[in-house]
Length: 374
Image (cartoon, rainbow, N blue to C red):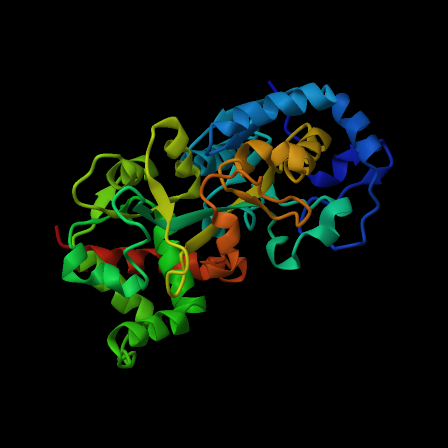
């Protein structure tokens, strides 16, 4: 059993330098990658977790590169959070590094209670936007509006409000916001940071201003979409099946991860991204990199976070259209969705209002529940 170390001040790199694990002071921390590698080799193997199975491949490649053993495991976001909390409370930390895809929970619960902390590799700090450093966003994943390219020469939707019209009743596939908290976070992020665009899109579609005296434009859209009987799924695969399967007679629109565009190659699907859709073609959601506070292998954990921030380390996920926050790391040219060309038309996730997303989840769920029609 791994021994629990209660404070980070006991965690020394090469016996002399203490590396701060909490939110970094950019440019203030001395850093020696070679020393970190040597210190990591002297520690116990680490366990690393993500919501994608690609973490297994990434951990194996890390082990081969550095001779530091890492075991990768795919774990759903909610299970990751429960694991972090329970292991910390029991002083029996087994998981060392987590890429958490529930940003508000990380911001509202995990970090404030000291269960885990964020660490930014000092030698990369100037390549990472300060807005995504506290806590560190390892990667951002895009959920994009998608159509069937076999049925349509171009996306049949140019404005997000068209999805609320009778023509598309029952023909919009997406994950259920009552079971996928990132969707209610998206609603809240739109209301806080993209509401003017939603109101402008309404005016562009209908030629008149939307009355926002009692609710946001985003809330009005969410209510209208819920009332239009969207096809709700429990995973993005269901939306990909509904939208992209070949041989369909009637088309669906879908909101799904850019990672599902690999179905075009793997299954002969016909998924196409709705380029230029107003006000956005979709939204971005982060994977927050966290190191368990009680890890007995702090240097190995930091080395793994460092590896994830390199082009080599993140390559298995970049191939699926997931984007590193390291500005030196680009998407591969053959990434199947084409999301890289739409970055300016995607709603980014603003961690500064992550606590607001956490507090507003129940309100958005109630709004959806009250207005949803089958």
